Image (cartoon, rainbow, N blue to C red; front, side, top):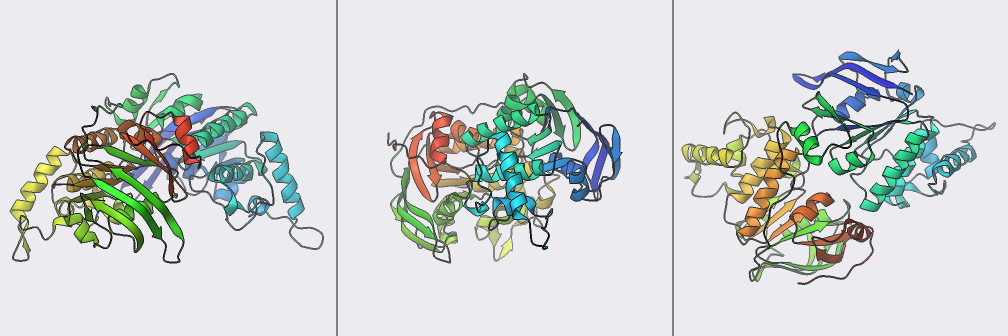
Length: 504
């Protein structure tokens, strides 16, 4: 089925998320929609899927204009969508999830689960998925859950299939398997729209590439284009994609974590007997599929976790039992994984956000009153130094782009004397130009003799900036290996296969 979007425009108040976008996807083609988070890719696909109504423009299938009032109309027309965050009910079986919303009944009015099971088997056999229709979805690995999403779409006879950032929660091996599935679907005649911001993946699987920047199509590219060419299209300027760093100069002391356990309020163990060291002058990257204890590990280090056993010592000083304020005042810089939830106050000015964790510092506060001139001068210096694109120090942080909001957080945490930097998902949701800048600052911090922990689900980022890599799986570290460890080996570790620890 041929898909065509003509002049699609979608506005949210004064924000133009999609600006007269044209796109053609031919039958049996993998068409990649490439752009950074916030570029408008997912908004465009939500218009296609009927979740949003376009303000202008038309959707055509095989040259016939469509009018979708909701996802149900889109599905009937032959459009399926595999969402980044799976739309599955964990306590339901595979068959129950597949039939959800399209239930059929037998002569007695009972749900016809036998028909759903047969449909799952038929689609699974066609693509070699090997999925038990009676398996409970919540018990399945993430990669298999994604296949259930694909079966749901194909069971409803989807001729156009949209994959929205489908590799965000997959190991490298699962990503390779998904690429194979996409090729198989293409060869079977399915038209595929592949939404991503990962250059390696788009070059590997796409037949054609359309690049979106700030809600506008800025060009088309061939899969033979280099990463640098694609990044330049995405950002609008040349980007250095390789992290420049020298061999680390290791110092004494640093962070020593031993026998760390973190429990949820309900008593479940989410970090289980974790031990490692991070020495001054090195970056230890913590890798793994999201949800394997990385968040809770970071929370324990910075004092946000309530139920913590074990020891976390920084230059011999015990951090377990200290308050968050006490830990930050000990010289720990913290870049949280969700800047909007934990890193910024959107209604506060850029200047105020730059001293959120220094609000009692005598340099900025005297007699309980903020020294506005001092703060303004400090903020202007940081804005220039960290290339924060803003109208000025008094602009509300919430009005900045995602990349510039992240720069505010980075500037705040790196503009004071540090004994440890903990950066969780430091480049999540930012463009490749901001990624280049943030990586450079992290390496500068490491070269200043500060121990650095970077937690990231992006394997390319992990291997680029790390000196050593610790891989977490189900709350435990399965191994600590050098940064030049092959991707396939790291993928096995992310799936839970232990590897020998490297202490050198």
